[in-house]
Length: 78
Image (tube, rainbow, N blue to C red; front, side):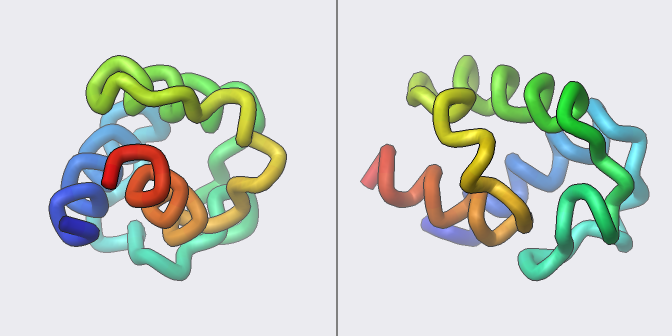
């Protein structure tokens, strides 16, 4: 199921932050690697909250990498 979360998360990051899909990996750091700021990350989390019907925004300070986000999604959904 993680790969499904990654695919959907990657698509949202691509749309909200304008990042090329080839740059987005599980180990990518939002700020350092993808140049995603706090507001963009908030938009990404909000979009994923709607998509998966889970609470993510309250965990924003714990999300540093794409993998952190995927792990959080897995934890909340599975």
